[in-house]
Amino acid sequence: MYRSNGNFEAYGRPCKPAGVDGKKAYFVGAGLASLAGAAFLVRDAQMAGENITILEELALPGGSMDGVLDEHKGFIIRGGREMEAHFETLWDLFRSIPSLDTPNASVLDEMYWLHKKDPSVNPRRATERRGEPVPHMTDLTLTPKAVEEMLKLVLTPESELDDKRIDECFGDEFFASNFWLYWATMFAFEPWASAMEMRRYMLRFVHHIATLADLSSLRFTQYNQYESLIRPLVAWLEGEGVHFQYATQVENIEVEAAGGSKVARRLVMTVEGERKTLDLTETDVVFVTNGSITESSTFGDNDHPAPIETGHGGAWTLWKNLAAQDPAFGRPEKFCENIPEANWTVSATVTLLDDRIAPYIEKMTGRDPRDGCIVTGGPCNFRDSNWLYGYTMSRQPHFKAQDSGQKLVVWLYGLFSDKPGNYVKKTIRECTGVELCEEWLFHMGVPVGDIPTLARRSASTIPCCMPYITSYFMPRALGDRPLVVPEGSKNLAFIGNFAETEKDTVFTTEYSVRTAMEAVYTLFNVDRGVPEVFASSFDVRVLLNALYYLNDRKKLHEVRLPFMARLLGEVALRGIKGTYIEELLKDANLV
Image 1 (cartoon, rainbow, N blue to C red):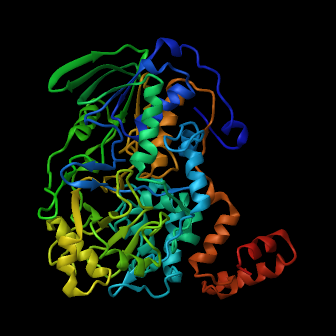
Image 2: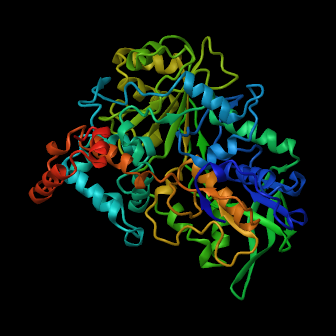
């Protein structure tokens, strides 16, 4: 497997690898990583779909990318995915998947046309005092000290960041900035989260710094991602003959290690309650999604909070059983144990039942939520919320089954689960659906006297508790996540966001697809480059643009730097007058 860039590799179709016809592939889990891996096997390794089996514990595919209409509770989404132009492998995948809704178009075509017609932008990224815009909303409000701390982290090698937390690298000035407010609520970072992952995010998404205040760099699907992405992908795979086997929990993969090689020999699983084993040969290849952020999810309703599950589910049990066989298979306990109390645990889906709440959304965003266009364009957050509460409202209808003439769907989440709310004096985990809605309406500026009636009669709110939702960001050390293909592995690969690949960032659809592509290309010797992670941190134009916005659109001579650095800067500026360097600085508005 090798990485590449440029159109020559991007548009190339690889030759069929030798020996592929005699192989079978098994995917453990039916999340995006497995679905993408199966697609790359069919499209690029040119394996017959009938030789691919996807084993799934639940009764439907999609993993964490869900969106369902529950006959008893109503519409439910556990979250949404923020996508951007530089998800290289994601778009490489979906350019090949036909849309289910748009004739003669791929899923990528469909999204591309939609974004051109209705580009995303967030008009009210953050508020306080029950609906007032935060001061200097378009600024990042970073002090020189905070910027210096950011540069120091970026310049620190990953090898020196083992088990380090973000709050060990930054002071109070950084956490008081709009930058941290926007960054944390966009990506779901907590102060206790991994400094190593924070560094990766800063390098990976430096090109987003200019748009943190309005999120205009994001891309969103027409409907929830289950209907817009997962369903077309599953339909295509089924059409290619890929087998989906549900109600199947793989409890262990027995691996034989000898002479430096590792060979998966047996799957141990429970199928519809019956214990079974499947013997493997070296020509049988296994791809496992290890761990899960939505494992043990529970749901409440208007009158009941979502129960809190404390045990480890099937995905974590499988990873622990694998890790017990070889240190190269990672350390799952680093991610699923000792999760801090001050974390994001609860989200909620609100279905509006009449027209009484919609005007408050329109007042906040300046947009009619019924016109079919982007409403919030990503998360809107309440800075003075004890929960750091926020909401997002995508294009409506968000579900195909939604009655766009009446019902609207809103998604809520809070990043701090250890503090009482501002209106509801409970922690977010203790709240019923009605109470979660009440807290949201309070921060939206709804008159206090109207809140209880609106929350109960004009909305149906389904809480969801996800005890592992922030596990990706647990402080970690090198080696805690297994490599996509561990050293010496002949027929076993790890895919998804708990597998390790260089430079890219977890908690993204891109990471799921990238690890799947790398796994398939490695184990099947596909002679086509895996698109490299967008090298934004190596593009001087991006870096200069980031410098401009990190300093709230100041010119270089206005930036407060230490005396010697500023003196050297002034000398250097005189020296570059009339050169290409001056052109670059002018393009970035720095001079």
